[in-house]
Amino acid sequence: MLRAVLLATLLGISLTAFAATEVDQSRTKFAQVKDQDSAAAAAQLTTLIAEGTMKANAATHFLTRRNWEMLLHDMQDAIGSMRSPEAQKIFANMLPKSPPDAQVLLCLGLKKAPANIEVDAAAMTLVRNGTHFRVLVSAMEMLAAHKHAPAAEKIISVLDPQAFPSVQIAALRALAMIPDKASVPAIMKYLTGVQGDGGRYLYEATTALRAITGEKLDAIAPELKRWWERNEKDWAFDAAKAKAPVYNYELTEKKEVDYYDIPVVENRLVIVLDCSGSMQLGGTPNRLERAKEALKLLISRLRDKQLFNIVTYSNAPRRWKQQPPLVSATEAARKEATAYVEGLKFGGGTQTTTTMEETLREIVVTTGCETIFLVTDGNPNPWSQEITNEQQERHISWINESLKTRINTIGIYTKVASDSKFKINEDVEKMREFLKKLAEHNDGIYKEINVEGKKE
Image (cartoon, rainbow, N blue to C red):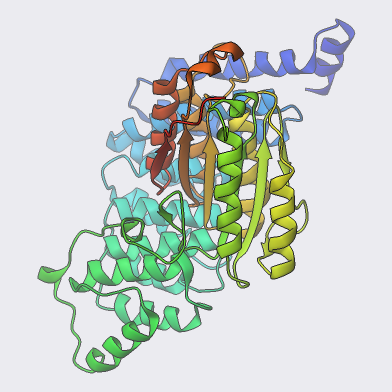
Protein backbone atom coordinates (compact mmCIF):
# COMPACT_ATOMS: atom_id res chain seq x y z
CA MET A 1 0.00 0.00 0.00
CA LEU A 2 2.77 2.45 0.98
CA ARG A 3 4.66 1.73 -2.25
CA ALA A 4 1.50 2.37 -4.25
CA VAL A 5 0.87 5.65 -2.46
CA LEU A 6 4.46 6.79 -3.09
CA LEU A 7 4.16 5.86 -6.74
CA ALA A 8 0.89 7.78 -7.01
CA THR A 9 2.57 10.82 -5.46
CA LEU A 10 5.54 10.63 -7.81
CA LEU A 11 3.18 10.47 -10.76
CA GLY A 12 1.40 13.57 -9.56
CA ILE A 13 -1.81 11.76 -8.60
CA SER A 14 -3.48 13.07 -5.47
CA LEU A 15 -3.96 10.73 -2.53
CA THR A 16 -7.67 11.49 -2.65
CA ALA A 17 -7.84 10.30 -6.26
CA PHE A 18 -5.81 7.23 -5.34
CA ALA A 19 -8.20 6.44 -2.49
CA ALA A 20 -11.12 6.96 -4.87
CA THR A 21 -9.61 4.27 -7.07
CA GLU A 22 -9.59 1.91 -4.10
CA VAL A 23 -13.25 2.73 -3.41
CA ASP A 24 -14.08 2.07 -7.05
CA GLN A 25 -12.33 -1.29 -6.89
CA SER A 26 -14.36 -2.28 -3.84
CA ARG A 27 -17.52 -0.96 -5.47
CA THR A 28 -16.86 -3.20 -8.48
CA LYS A 29 -16.35 -6.24 -6.24
CA PHE A 30 -19.53 -5.38 -4.36
CA ALA A 31 -21.53 -5.06 -7.60
CA GLN A 32 -20.54 -8.61 -8.48
CA VAL A 33 -22.11 -10.09 -5.31
CA LYS A 34 -24.81 -7.68 -4.12
CA ASP A 35 -27.64 -9.40 -6.01
CA GLN A 36 -26.52 -12.91 -5.11
CA ASP A 37 -27.74 -14.89 -2.11
CA SER A 38 -25.15 -17.53 -1.39
CA ALA A 39 -22.45 -18.47 1.09
CA ALA A 40 -19.75 -17.22 -1.27
CA ALA A 41 -21.48 -13.85 -1.75
CA ALA A 42 -22.01 -13.44 2.01
CA ALA A 43 -18.36 -14.25 2.70
CA GLN A 44 -17.19 -11.76 0.09
CA LEU A 45 -19.55 -9.07 1.40
CA THR A 46 -18.36 -9.59 4.98
CA THR A 47 -14.75 -9.22 3.84
CA LEU A 48 -15.56 -6.06 1.88
CA ILE A 49 -17.32 -4.55 4.91
CA ALA A 50 -14.34 -5.24 7.18
CA GLU A 51 -11.97 -3.70 4.66
CA GLY A 52 -14.30 -0.75 3.97
CA THR A 53 -14.73 0.19 7.62
CA MET A 54 -10.97 0.07 8.11
CA LYS A 55 -10.38 2.29 5.07
CA ALA A 56 -13.05 4.76 6.15
CA ASN A 57 -11.56 5.07 9.63
CA ALA A 58 -8.07 5.54 8.22
CA ALA A 59 -9.08 8.19 5.67
CA THR A 60 -7.44 11.56 6.26
CA HIS A 61 -9.62 13.48 3.81
CA PHE A 62 -13.35 13.85 4.43
CA LEU A 63 -14.22 13.15 0.77
CA THR A 64 -12.33 9.87 0.88
CA ARG A 65 -14.05 8.87 4.10
CA ARG A 66 -17.47 9.76 2.76
CA ASN A 67 -16.88 7.80 -0.44
CA TRP A 68 -16.14 4.73 1.64
CA GLU A 69 -19.11 5.35 3.92
CA MET A 70 -21.52 5.81 1.03
CA LEU A 71 -20.42 2.40 -0.23
CA LEU A 72 -20.83 0.94 3.26
CA HIS A 73 -24.44 2.26 3.30
CA ASP A 74 -25.15 0.11 0.25
CA MET A 75 -23.35 -2.92 1.68
CA GLN A 76 -25.40 -2.68 4.87
CA ASP A 77 -28.61 -2.70 2.83
CA ALA A 78 -27.41 -5.71 0.82
CA ILE A 79 -26.92 -7.77 3.98
CA GLY A 80 -30.65 -7.68 4.67
CA SER A 81 -31.45 -9.12 1.24
CA MET A 82 -29.16 -12.17 1.61
CA ARG A 83 -31.61 -14.46 3.37
CA SER A 84 -30.68 -17.96 2.27
CA PRO A 85 -29.66 -20.43 5.04
CA GLU A 86 -26.20 -20.61 3.48
CA ALA A 87 -25.67 -16.83 3.58
CA GLN A 88 -27.11 -16.55 7.09
CA LYS A 89 -24.74 -19.25 8.31
CA ILE A 90 -21.77 -17.25 7.04
CA PHE A 91 -23.04 -14.09 8.75
CA ALA A 92 -23.55 -15.98 12.01
CA ASN A 93 -20.04 -17.36 11.84
CA MET A 94 -18.40 -14.03 10.96
CA LEU A 95 -20.35 -11.73 13.29
CA PRO A 96 -18.39 -12.47 16.51
CA LYS A 97 -15.06 -12.46 14.62
CA SER A 98 -15.45 -9.18 12.73
CA PRO A 99 -13.99 -5.80 13.80
CA PRO A 100 -16.41 -3.66 15.89
CA ASP A 101 -17.39 -1.28 13.06
CA ALA A 102 -18.11 -4.24 10.79
CA GLN A 103 -20.19 -5.83 13.56
CA VAL A 104 -22.32 -2.69 13.68
CA LEU A 105 -23.03 -2.86 9.94
CA LEU A 106 -23.71 -6.59 10.05
CA CYS A 107 -26.22 -6.26 12.90
CA LEU A 108 -28.01 -3.26 11.38
CA GLY A 109 -28.20 -5.03 8.03
CA LEU A 110 -29.32 -8.37 9.50
CA LYS A 111 -32.12 -6.75 11.51
CA LYS A 112 -33.94 -6.26 8.18
CA ALA A 113 -33.72 -9.98 7.38
CA PRO A 114 -36.05 -12.55 8.98
CA ALA A 115 -35.02 -14.03 12.34
CA ASN A 116 -32.43 -16.77 12.13
CA ILE A 117 -31.50 -18.98 15.10
CA GLU A 118 -27.78 -19.03 14.32
CA VAL A 119 -27.55 -15.31 13.61
CA ASP A 120 -29.47 -14.42 16.77
CA ALA A 121 -27.28 -16.73 18.85
CA ALA A 122 -24.19 -15.01 17.45
CA ALA A 123 -25.62 -11.57 18.26
CA MET A 124 -26.36 -12.72 21.81
CA THR A 125 -22.61 -13.12 22.41
CA LEU A 126 -22.21 -9.38 21.80
CA VAL A 127 -24.77 -8.33 24.43
CA ARG A 128 -22.56 -8.00 27.48
CA ASN A 129 -20.90 -5.31 29.54
CA GLY A 130 -17.62 -4.24 27.97
CA THR A 131 -18.86 -4.42 24.38
CA HIS A 132 -18.36 -1.15 22.47
CA PHE A 133 -21.56 0.85 22.82
CA ARG A 134 -22.24 1.03 19.06
CA VAL A 135 -21.92 -2.75 18.72
CA LEU A 136 -24.12 -3.29 21.78
CA VAL A 137 -26.81 -0.94 20.47
CA SER A 138 -26.82 -2.58 17.03
CA ALA A 139 -26.96 -6.12 18.42
CA MET A 140 -29.90 -5.24 20.68
CA GLU A 141 -31.72 -3.57 17.80
CA MET A 142 -31.32 -6.68 15.67
CA LEU A 143 -32.49 -9.02 18.43
CA ALA A 144 -35.47 -6.76 19.12
CA ALA A 145 -36.42 -6.67 15.43
CA HIS A 146 -36.27 -10.49 15.42
CA LYS A 147 -38.24 -10.63 18.71
CA HIS A 148 -35.68 -13.08 20.06
CA ALA A 149 -37.23 -13.91 23.44
CA PRO A 150 -34.07 -15.39 25.07
CA ALA A 151 -32.37 -12.01 24.61
CA ALA A 152 -34.47 -10.30 27.31
CA GLU A 153 -32.36 -11.63 30.18
CA LYS A 154 -29.13 -10.46 28.56
CA ILE A 155 -30.57 -7.06 27.68
CA ILE A 156 -31.69 -6.57 31.27
CA SER A 157 -28.11 -7.24 32.38
CA VAL A 158 -26.83 -4.20 30.42
CA LEU A 159 -29.70 -1.84 31.35
CA ASP A 160 -27.80 0.60 33.54
CA PRO A 161 -28.40 4.35 34.10
CA GLN A 162 -24.62 4.80 33.95
CA ALA A 163 -24.34 3.17 30.51
CA PHE A 164 -23.82 5.25 27.38
CA PRO A 165 -27.16 6.96 26.55
CA SER A 166 -27.78 5.12 23.29
CA VAL A 167 -27.30 1.80 25.13
CA GLN A 168 -30.00 2.80 27.62
CA ILE A 169 -32.40 3.77 24.83
CA ALA A 170 -31.72 0.64 22.77
CA ALA A 171 -32.10 -1.62 25.81
CA LEU A 172 -35.42 -0.08 26.84
CA ARG A 173 -36.74 -0.29 23.29
CA ALA A 174 -35.63 -3.90 22.96
CA LEU A 175 -37.41 -4.83 26.20
CA ALA A 176 -40.53 -3.11 24.86
CA MET A 177 -40.33 -5.30 21.75
CA ILE A 178 -39.60 -8.52 23.66
CA PRO A 179 -42.03 -8.53 26.61
CA ASP A 180 -40.77 -10.60 29.54
CA LYS A 181 -41.88 -11.03 33.15
CA ALA A 182 -38.49 -9.88 34.45
CA SER A 183 -38.49 -6.63 32.47
CA VAL A 184 -40.87 -4.58 34.64
CA PRO A 185 -38.95 -4.97 37.92
CA ALA A 186 -35.71 -4.40 36.00
CA ILE A 187 -37.01 -1.16 34.48
CA MET A 188 -38.31 0.05 37.83
CA LYS A 189 -34.90 -0.64 39.39
CA TYR A 190 -33.28 1.20 36.49
CA LEU A 191 -35.48 4.25 37.10
CA THR A 192 -34.25 4.56 40.70
CA GLY A 193 -30.79 5.30 39.32
CA VAL A 194 -31.88 7.80 36.65
CA GLN A 195 -30.83 11.27 37.73
CA GLY A 196 -33.07 14.31 38.08
CA ASP A 197 -36.37 14.23 36.22
CA GLY A 198 -35.07 11.57 33.84
CA GLY A 199 -35.27 13.59 30.64
CA ARG A 200 -35.74 11.42 27.57
CA TYR A 201 -34.85 8.24 29.48
CA LEU A 202 -37.91 8.55 31.70
CA TYR A 203 -40.11 8.62 28.58
CA GLU A 204 -38.29 5.68 26.99
CA ALA A 205 -38.74 3.67 30.19
CA THR A 206 -42.42 4.61 30.40
CA THR A 207 -42.92 3.59 26.76
CA ALA A 208 -41.46 0.17 27.58
CA LEU A 209 -43.63 -0.19 30.70
CA ARG A 210 -46.75 0.76 28.74
CA ALA A 211 -45.95 -1.83 26.07
CA ILE A 212 -45.20 -4.67 28.51
CA THR A 213 -48.07 -4.05 30.94
CA GLY A 214 -50.68 -2.65 28.57
CA GLU A 215 -51.42 0.10 31.10
CA LYS A 216 -51.57 3.85 30.41
CA LEU A 217 -48.78 4.97 32.69
CA ASP A 218 -47.57 8.57 32.89
CA ALA A 219 -43.91 9.53 32.71
CA ILE A 220 -43.85 10.96 36.23
CA ALA A 221 -41.24 9.23 38.36
CA PRO A 222 -43.06 9.47 41.75
CA GLU A 223 -46.30 8.17 40.22
CA LEU A 224 -44.51 5.25 38.59
CA LYS A 225 -42.90 4.44 41.93
CA ARG A 226 -46.28 4.48 43.70
CA TRP A 227 -47.81 2.31 40.95
CA TRP A 228 -45.08 -0.28 41.42
CA GLU A 229 -45.37 -0.23 45.21
CA ARG A 230 -49.08 -1.06 44.84
CA ASN A 231 -48.56 -3.80 42.26
CA GLU A 232 -45.12 -5.32 42.84
CA LYS A 233 -46.24 -8.09 45.19
CA ASP A 234 -49.01 -9.48 42.98
CA TRP A 235 -47.85 -8.39 39.54
CA ALA A 236 -47.69 -11.09 36.89
CA PHE A 237 -46.85 -10.78 33.22
CA ASP A 238 -49.84 -11.24 30.93
CA ALA A 239 -48.83 -11.57 27.28
CA ALA A 240 -52.39 -10.85 26.20
CA LYS A 241 -52.16 -7.34 27.67
CA ALA A 242 -48.87 -6.43 26.03
CA LYS A 243 -49.06 -3.83 23.27
CA ALA A 244 -46.84 -2.61 20.46
CA PRO A 245 -44.66 0.23 21.81
CA VAL A 246 -45.51 3.79 20.78
CA TYR A 247 -42.20 5.63 20.69
CA ASN A 248 -41.74 9.41 20.97
CA TYR A 249 -45.30 9.94 22.20
CA GLU A 250 -44.01 12.76 24.40
CA LEU A 251 -43.52 14.93 21.31
CA THR A 252 -47.28 15.10 20.85
CA GLU A 253 -47.93 16.39 24.38
CA LYS A 254 -47.85 19.97 25.62
CA LYS A 255 -44.81 20.63 27.81
CA GLU A 256 -43.61 23.50 29.94
CA VAL A 257 -40.76 24.35 27.56
CA ASP A 258 -40.93 24.09 23.79
CA TYR A 259 -38.95 25.27 20.79
CA TYR A 260 -40.96 26.04 17.65
CA ASP A 261 -43.83 24.16 19.37
CA ILE A 262 -41.64 21.05 19.77
CA PRO A 263 -41.59 19.89 23.42
CA VAL A 264 -38.15 20.05 25.03
CA VAL A 265 -38.08 17.05 27.37
CA GLU A 266 -34.36 16.34 27.20
CA ASN A 267 -31.62 17.43 29.59
CA ARG A 268 -28.83 17.47 26.97
CA LEU A 269 -29.43 19.30 23.71
CA VAL A 270 -27.68 21.02 20.82
CA ILE A 271 -29.24 23.69 18.65
CA VAL A 272 -27.85 23.76 15.10
CA LEU A 273 -28.66 27.08 13.39
CA ASP A 274 -28.22 27.89 9.71
CA CYS A 275 -26.66 31.33 9.16
CA SER A 276 -26.28 31.09 5.38
CA GLY A 277 -26.81 34.00 3.02
CA SER A 278 -30.45 33.13 2.32
CA MET A 279 -31.28 33.79 5.98
CA GLN A 280 -31.42 37.48 5.00
CA LEU A 281 -34.71 36.79 3.19
CA GLY A 282 -38.12 37.29 4.75
CA GLY A 283 -38.41 41.04 4.96
CA THR A 284 -38.24 42.74 8.36
CA PRO A 285 -37.51 40.91 10.59
CA ASN A 286 -35.63 38.56 8.29
CA ARG A 287 -35.33 34.79 8.72
CA LEU A 288 -32.19 34.96 10.83
CA GLU A 289 -33.57 37.68 13.08
CA ARG A 290 -36.69 35.59 13.73
CA ALA A 291 -34.59 32.52 14.39
CA LYS A 292 -32.36 34.42 16.80
CA GLU A 293 -35.38 35.63 18.81
CA ALA A 294 -36.76 32.08 19.04
CA LEU A 295 -33.38 30.75 20.16
CA LYS A 296 -32.90 33.47 22.77
CA LEU A 297 -36.32 32.65 24.19
CA LEU A 298 -35.40 28.97 24.44
CA ILE A 299 -32.10 29.80 26.15
CA SER A 300 -33.90 31.95 28.71
CA ARG A 301 -36.17 29.02 29.62
CA LEU A 302 -33.48 26.38 30.08
CA ARG A 303 -32.88 25.15 33.61
CA ASP A 304 -29.51 25.07 35.36
CA LYS A 305 -29.36 21.26 35.29
CA GLN A 306 -29.76 21.15 31.52
CA LEU A 307 -26.67 20.95 29.31
CA PHE A 308 -26.59 22.63 25.92
CA ASN A 309 -24.51 24.02 23.08
CA ILE A 310 -25.13 26.05 19.94
CA VAL A 311 -23.65 25.17 16.57
CA THR A 312 -24.00 27.75 13.80
CA TYR A 313 -22.99 27.22 10.21
CA SER A 314 -22.84 28.50 6.66
CA ASN A 315 -19.74 27.44 4.72
CA ALA A 316 -18.46 25.62 7.81
CA PRO A 317 -19.69 24.80 11.34
CA ARG A 318 -18.83 26.98 14.31
CA ARG A 319 -19.54 26.13 17.95
CA TRP A 320 -20.48 28.58 20.66
CA LYS A 321 -18.46 26.42 23.09
CA GLN A 322 -15.67 24.24 21.75
CA GLN A 323 -14.93 22.74 25.16
CA PRO A 324 -16.67 21.37 27.04
CA PRO A 325 -18.98 20.16 24.25
CA LEU A 326 -22.05 20.69 26.46
CA VAL A 327 -22.38 23.45 29.06
CA SER A 328 -24.64 23.70 32.12
CA ALA A 329 -27.38 26.25 31.52
CA THR A 330 -26.45 28.45 34.47
CA GLU A 331 -27.48 32.09 34.51
CA ALA A 332 -23.98 33.13 33.42
CA ALA A 333 -23.95 30.60 30.56
CA ARG A 334 -27.39 31.65 29.38
CA LYS A 335 -26.28 35.28 29.35
CA GLU A 336 -23.14 34.43 27.38
CA ALA A 337 -25.07 32.27 24.91
CA THR A 338 -27.62 35.03 24.38
CA ALA A 339 -24.84 37.49 23.55
CA TYR A 340 -23.38 34.99 21.09
CA VAL A 341 -26.74 34.62 19.36
CA GLU A 342 -27.28 38.36 19.18
CA GLY A 343 -23.98 38.74 17.33
CA LEU A 344 -24.74 36.19 14.61
CA LYS A 345 -24.60 37.41 10.98
CA PHE A 346 -25.77 35.78 7.75
CA GLY A 347 -23.58 34.91 4.78
CA GLY A 348 -22.18 31.92 2.90
CA GLY A 349 -23.41 28.51 1.88
CA THR A 350 -25.42 25.75 3.58
CA GLN A 351 -23.07 22.98 4.67
CA THR A 352 -25.72 21.06 6.60
CA THR A 353 -24.27 17.57 6.25
CA THR A 354 -20.77 18.61 7.32
CA THR A 355 -22.23 20.41 10.32
CA MET A 356 -24.50 17.57 11.39
CA GLU A 357 -21.68 15.08 10.87
CA GLU A 358 -19.34 17.08 13.11
CA THR A 359 -22.06 17.56 15.73
CA LEU A 360 -22.76 13.83 15.88
CA ARG A 361 -19.13 12.71 15.78
CA GLU A 362 -17.64 15.32 18.09
CA ILE A 363 -20.42 16.25 20.50
CA VAL A 364 -22.88 13.35 20.61
CA VAL A 365 -20.25 10.59 20.71
CA THR A 366 -18.53 12.23 23.69
CA THR A 367 -21.62 13.38 25.62
CA GLY A 368 -24.54 11.18 24.61
CA CYS A 369 -26.55 14.29 23.74
CA GLU A 370 -30.26 13.39 23.77
CA THR A 371 -31.50 15.67 21.01
CA ILE A 372 -30.49 18.02 18.21
CA PHE A 373 -32.68 20.82 16.87
CA LEU A 374 -31.74 21.69 13.28
CA VAL A 375 -33.03 25.09 12.11
CA THR A 376 -32.39 25.84 8.44
CA ASP A 377 -33.85 27.58 5.40
CA GLY A 378 -31.96 25.95 2.53
CA ASN A 379 -31.16 22.75 0.73
CA PRO A 380 -27.91 21.21 1.96
CA ASN A 381 -24.95 21.98 -0.27
CA PRO A 382 -23.67 18.72 -1.85
CA TRP A 383 -20.01 17.85 -1.35
CA SER A 384 -19.77 16.81 -4.99
CA GLN A 385 -21.96 17.49 -8.00
CA GLU A 386 -23.74 14.13 -8.15
CA ILE A 387 -24.71 13.98 -4.45
CA THR A 388 -28.45 14.33 -3.83
CA ASN A 389 -30.46 15.54 -0.84
CA GLU A 390 -31.61 11.94 -0.31
CA GLN A 391 -28.03 10.73 -0.06
CA GLN A 392 -27.16 13.48 2.42
CA GLU A 393 -30.14 12.63 4.61
CA ARG A 394 -29.21 8.97 4.48
CA HIS A 395 -25.62 9.74 5.44
CA ILE A 396 -26.61 11.76 8.50
CA SER A 397 -29.13 9.13 9.60
CA TRP A 398 -26.60 6.34 9.03
CA ILE A 399 -24.07 8.01 11.34
CA ASN A 400 -26.79 8.45 13.97
CA GLU A 401 -28.21 4.93 13.69
CA SER A 402 -26.27 3.59 16.66
CA LEU A 403 -26.12 6.93 18.51
CA LYS A 404 -29.93 7.21 18.86
CA THR A 405 -29.93 11.01 19.16
CA ARG A 406 -33.30 12.55 18.41
CA ILE A 407 -33.14 15.02 15.51
CA ASN A 408 -35.95 17.56 15.26
CA THR A 409 -35.98 19.73 12.15
CA ILE A 410 -37.37 23.22 11.55
CA GLY A 411 -37.65 24.60 8.03
CA ILE A 412 -37.91 28.38 7.61
CA TYR A 413 -39.60 29.58 4.42
CA THR A 414 -40.59 33.16 5.29
CA LYS A 415 -40.43 35.29 2.13
CA VAL A 416 -41.64 38.62 0.75
CA ALA A 417 -41.87 39.94 -2.80
CA SER A 418 -38.81 42.18 -2.41
CA ASP A 419 -36.66 39.10 -1.81
CA SER A 420 -36.51 38.62 -5.58
CA LYS A 421 -33.71 41.20 -5.71
CA PHE A 422 -31.35 38.75 -4.00
CA LYS A 423 -31.72 36.25 -6.88
CA ILE A 424 -31.56 33.27 -4.52
CA ASN A 425 -33.10 30.22 -6.16
CA GLU A 426 -34.89 28.06 -3.57
CA ASP A 427 -36.48 24.64 -3.99
CA VAL A 428 -38.74 24.48 -0.95
CA GLU A 429 -40.24 21.09 -1.81
CA LYS A 430 -36.83 19.43 -1.96
CA MET A 431 -35.80 21.01 1.31
CA ARG A 432 -39.08 20.08 2.99
CA GLU A 433 -38.63 16.45 1.95
CA PHE A 434 -35.04 16.42 3.23
CA LEU A 435 -36.02 17.78 6.64
CA LYS A 436 -39.11 15.60 6.98
CA LYS A 437 -37.15 12.42 6.27
CA LEU A 438 -34.31 13.44 8.55
CA ALA A 439 -36.72 13.92 11.47
CA GLU A 440 -38.73 10.80 10.63
CA HIS A 441 -35.64 8.56 10.55
CA ASN A 442 -34.22 9.97 13.80
CA ASP A 443 -37.09 9.93 16.31
CA GLY A 444 -37.90 13.60 15.79
CA ILE A 445 -40.63 15.73 14.31
CA TYR A 446 -40.61 18.36 11.59
CA LYS A 447 -41.99 21.90 11.82
CA GLU A 448 -42.02 24.65 9.27
CA ILE A 449 -42.13 28.43 9.60
CA ASN A 450 -43.79 30.25 6.73
CA VAL A 451 -44.79 33.63 8.15
CA GLU A 452 -45.03 36.74 6.00
CA GLY A 453 -42.40 39.29 6.94
CA LYS A 454 -43.03 43.01 6.80
CA LYS A 455 -42.19 44.61 3.48
CA GLU A 456 -39.05 46.72 3.53
